Image (cartoon, rainbow, N blue to C red; front, side, top):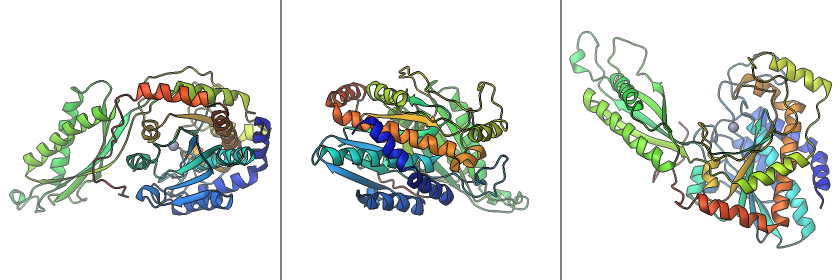
Length: 453
Ligand SMILES: [Zn+2]
């Protein structure tokens, strides 16, 4: 099977794949509640002849679809969760949502693009015959919150893979290089005693005071943290709207980031002490609930170079005048000082990096268990803000569909290259072994299970 055959195969499946991503765009389900989206992807793959295992790692909306037999085993990662508050009309040129959920990060495309790659690899494996290798597509729910891949990694789901590949919708065609941050999320809930704030204040113990004191303590901590670290918070429960009631319950959600899992755990233990101090000062009690965590990414130059070669070789999208016009209309709705054109064409030159970016992703946990790499392809206008109404509006447009098929072509060809030339996998593994010599520390605390908050 030539790469040209693979490109044609995916072009031929364009209408099936776009129908699938359009359905998931419409479902717009939140983290760990992607019941219809996960079922739709799993059913599609099952009908295509994949063996599907649902509810893996104890997560209802996680699944694994595999095809083929023998080594090597290559993993493809799929996501399909949406974001709250971003509902939008498809094709809109101004914000006109009504507050529901929307695919502001393009995960309806992400999941289906990986499915497309899996279809192409299946066709290749059928041609090669039995025992030539296996492709496994992992349906990974909840990337936007309550990230599932670390829970799946804790069960060692990716450890047997020879490599894993993924992609993400974006505004440029490029290889994802460099690392990012470990991130841990903990919910601190303080319990006090309600009382009349004027008549019997001495009887009350304020949970809201505890939240405020905790936040103040963390403000002082910030000056004495390594420069790699950061801490963010959201008060999720202020204890009610009545100032004349001493608030009996209040909660604050913290996100703690550092360059490695052990460093993030060290920082979290300092935040824990501040929470305990706030409870002591206010004579409240503290309930601490660890929610989720993601590890930093281990970059892999061998896989990145291979992905880059395929990005350059595959037929990049060519846009019609109508597509250019729609991209320009969205582009006009946000500040875009560093983007001279409404849509980026071509491939960004690849320069490998091991630097840590400031964001986080649960692809990091996969990368600690097997050599892993990712690409981004254009599905949005240049400079379009992440998690924005613009990204939701363009999600069912042919600009988005073209970027998704392009990603499927690049991932599919990269998997075929890995099957055809095992020395690439050896080189990728050698690099990975050096970079992971300290071993994987799962960011998830013992006994914690995925939960919807
Ligand atoms: Zn995303």
